[in-house]
Image 1: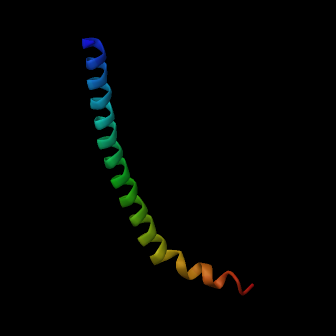
Image 2 (image 1 turned 180 degrees about the horizontal axis):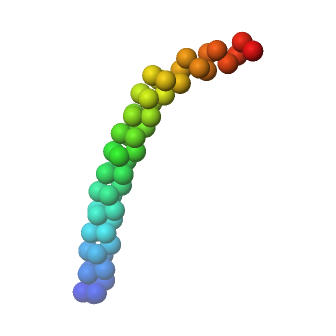
Length: 54
């Protein structure tokens, strides 16, 4: 009984730890996506419109 309770506590702790890491990963990916979006909007937007003329 105590072993099952200990395993349950460890599983819940591990899940909580994993979820917090996933939050940090999600925030990092969001920041990278925003940086890429801003950089693409500044430099690459004009080249795409002139490509269809040729």
